[in-house]
Length: 486
Image (tube, rainbow, N blue to C red):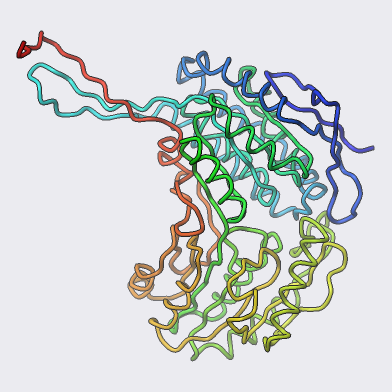
C-alpha cells in the first residue's frame, strides 16, 4: 500500500482544500510509493498565515530553548537512519551509503544551526556623538519561503530550513515533486517530534503541473520576506526573478559544470579513486559532481586506462542492494536525457571510453567519454547523471582556461601532491568552492557553501547562513541628552 501524506500547516496534517492529490513514483520499480496532497494557491496562503502567526513567539523564544529543539532533532534524525535509507531508496533511488551520508550531514547541519542560535551576533560600533553607544544587531526577517530539491533530499531539505529557523524566522517549504517526503515532510516530522512549535515550519506539497503557480504564489505573498532555492540554473533564474520583482533577498544555489584537475604532479591511483567518486556518487546527481576531468597530458594515458577499468566494474542497479554504487536516476526520463547527451556527443565525434548504450528503466550505465567537441550539448550542459568527460591539457594555463570555460562556477577539485602548486592554480579558477588535493564533491555544515556566475549567489552554512536570513539593524543608545541646533 502506498503511503498517504497530507500538507503540514499550523502543526496539523491537513488535506489540500481542493482535495487533490498527486503520486510519488519510485524510480527503480516505477510503482507508486506514496500519495501526497496537491496544494493550490489557497493552501499556500494558509501556510503563510500559520507561519506569520507563529513568527513573533518563535523569534522571542529563549535561545537555549530553541537550541535544544535543534539538538534533539539531530539525534532523532540519526536514530532513523535505517528508515531514511529505505525512504530514499524508494523515493529517489538513493543507495544506502548515500542515504547514510545524507543522515549524518543533515544531523550536523541541525547541530551547527543550534550552535548558531546562541553564538554572538552583532557588533559594538564607534559613535560620533559623545555618550552614545552604537550597535549593529542581527534580527530575523519574518516568514521565509524555502524550496528543497530531491537529489540530496535530507541534506538539502534540512539545509533549506535550518538557518532560517535558527535566525528566528518561520518557514514555508515547498519540497520537490520527486521527493516530497524525504526533503520536506520527513524533515518537518523530525523537528515536530523534537518540539518545534506549531506553525514555525509548514510544508506545502504539490502536483508537478502546479509547481510554477505554487512557487509564484509563495514568493509573492507580502508576508514572505526572503527566499532560498537549491536546484537547476534554469528554474533558479525564475525564482530569482520573482524574488527581485517583489524586492526580497534570495539565496540561490544552482547548477554546476564542475571540473576536477589532475595536475602533472598528482598521484594517479589516488586521482582515479577521487575522480570516480566525484563522477558517480549518487549516480552523478549532485550539483558538485565532476562533469569534466582535466588531466595533464603526461598522465592522460595511464589515468584514462585505470579510470575506465574502475568505472566499468562499478556495481549498478537496485538501490536497496548495499553493494550498489550506481543506482537509478530520479526518473526514467532523466536516464533518457543522459542517453541523449551521450548519443549527441558520440554523433559529433566523441569517443566512449566505457559505458554508453541504452538505459534500463531509470538506470543508465556509468559512462566516460573523451574527445567531446564544443558543438556537443554535453560540452557546456550539466550532465547530472552517471556521465563524465576526460580531456588532456598541456600546462596549467590551459587547464585553468578549460576549467573557467563555463557559465557556471560552483566547485572545483585539484589533484596534486604539491599544495603550493595547487593553491596557485586554485586562485585562478572562478568558483565559489575549491578543494586542493581532493575532488569536487564535499560539504561541511559550518562552511560557506555556494557558487558564482550561473551557479547562483548567497551562501548557506555556518554564520553565513544565519546572516543570509537575518537583517542588520543599527541601534543607538544615548547615555546623555543630545544638543540640537534649534
